[in-house]
Length: 97
Ligand SMILES: [Zn+2]
Image 1 (cartoon, rainbow, N blue to C red):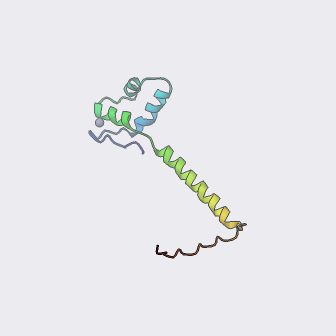
Image 2 (tube, helix red, strand yellow):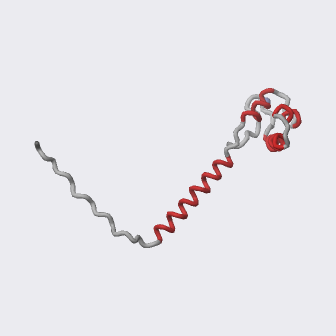
Image 3 (spheres, helix red, strand yellow):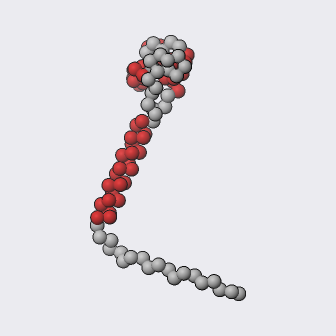
């Protein structure tokens, strides 16, 4: 979801290295070079940065879609329904053969 503040193994702060790490990769650096550039030396910290999946954007996008759907359904309920209410079907009775 959101990058951990500290490395789960050694406890070193890695949170501030995430955005520069992504920016260096967008500039065309390999992950290895980007990790060296942000000074992530220990393998545990490198794996924390390498394996992180940033889901917060996806979560926010899904929340926005749900909010839009809720707004649309609220406007639909405010408008009068042009169709008459649906009749309930008569209950089926058991027929012996
Ligand atoms: Zn570490």
